[in-house]
Length: 427
Image 1 (cartoon, rainbow, N blue to C red):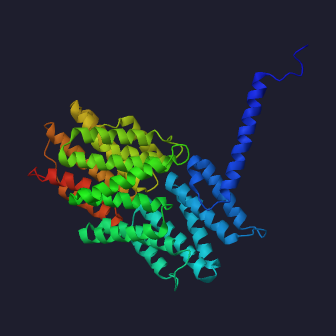
Image 2: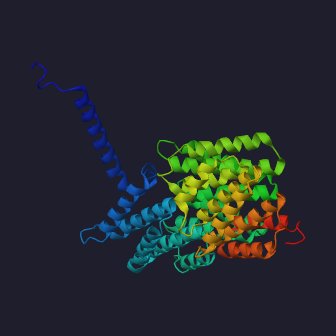
Image 3: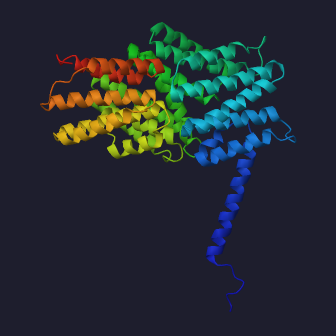
């Protein structure tokens, strides 16, 4: 009886948890009013979608005090949800928000900001699903909304314009275009400031890629410094995804250098970077970011097949670039494992599965599976089977499709097998 009215330890714990939850809700309430959307890195994709819906609903209310700004936030949240989940409907919602902004914009600044949002949706569609024409459309949108004088939106315009030109330069492979794009990104960062994380990531990635291709130590040093600053400034407690993306780029750079120089230590360091990137968040928090890390580290054949299977399950059936890359890497790993144990029956099963998947496949998935069929035929030949036939035709079609969709990584993979197939006189 003496215990009646005395709070139990469990009650105290629950009370503290309730107070913590209340403080957390207060924090997010304050964050929602801020222009900085960095806080969304702390929430999973489901809650992110809920936040985007809430903002879109608020923007449509008659009582909304700042409908243009609120709808811009909704567009940004839908874009981030699409970037992390690959959901086509989220991309569509983001584009509808951007189109609504373009219709509602009044004055040069709002017109320019609406164009920035529209261009960002088109750029994200390219990043997720390919088709270089989307980059041309995005640049045309920006060109048609440029203000007559410098304003608060100039930094946003410069940033998106530079990021679009960088993507075009990477597709062209022209060294001069890559250097011009790098110069544009330098100027854009000077104008936009250090707060534009996407620009900083793209700039570091471009410097890294160009440095590896041109064997340019200056560019590699610049990329290393920029990524180091990003990793240090992105706290795992507040910016886990930014930190993970920067670490993954570091890993990709080290792996590329290791491949060029056959440097074992750099390869081990790259693997450690990928592991550190994957440890920043869980697969369900940002499925596509996690899948990208698995594809990047699959290059050294160290990624367990189970992880590639999981990445494929998260990305398949949506016509995504990352889905096709995971599909190709997972199949290559299965073929290599079957070949290692001389499992001809296993190769037959893989071929049957690939041929059935080709029917109705999206263009990039189709190209990935054609590469898989060619890889499988070469593996079977190495085990004493018949010389592969018509591989040149199959792989050239895969290369053409990958290039048409703007996915040079997939085209390069097909090109490697095309070179190997040329060693077989019957191909």
